[in-house]
Figure (cartoon, rainbow, N blue to C red):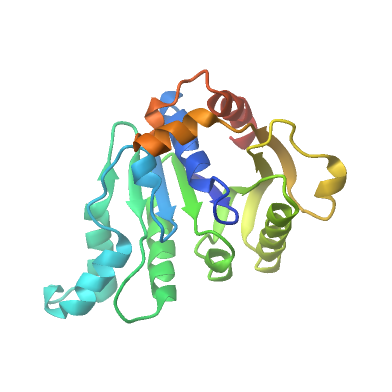
Length: 247
C-alpha cells in the first residue's frame, strides 16, 4: 500500500510548489515509485515538474459525455473511464503524474471527485508513495476526495488569514473523520516560523517553516520547472531537512 501525503491549504500559498519539491526529493532519495496526483482543477503540478500532460480526468469525462458511443460494448462507463485514466498517466523517470482537471461540459463536478477517489484508491497499491496536491480551500475535503492519508500536510503562511484557513481545514478533516496518521502544519515563506501562541486551537503538529526563496520566483517567471532549483537553495534545503518527519 502506497504511503500517501495529502497537501492542503488556501490558494496562493505555495501548495503545488511544495508538492512538486516533495516528489522531487522522493525521486532523488530513490525511496521507491512515486505518483503525483494533481487534484486541483487549476492544474500545474506537471508543469512544475517539467511534464506535459496529455489529458486530465475532466477532459476524459467531457469526451465520454459528448461521445457515448466510444464506450465499447460490454464495458461499463466507470470501467471505461478507469481504463482511459490509466492510459493518460504521464510517466517520467522515477515518478508519474495524474491530473484531475475540471470538466467543461454539463454534469456534477462531485462525480469527478468520486472517480478520482476510487481510482486513487486502486492506484496507491501500485506505488510506494502517492503525493496529492489538493484543491485550494475546503471543497475537496467536504467531498472527501482525500478519504484517508498517512500524512495530512496543511500549508499556510504566517498571516492571520492563512492560519484561520489552516484551522478550518484541520477542523473539517476531524469533523469528516478523514483518517490520517500524521497531521502537520507547514509555514511557507517565513524564515522565522511562527510562535506557539498563534497555533493555539489548530489541531496540527507544527512541522516547521520554509523561507521565502527568490530562486523559485525566477524559475516561474522563466517558465522553467523546479528541477532547475539548486539543491543548496533555501527552500530545497529546509524541506529536505523536514522530510524525515514527513516520512
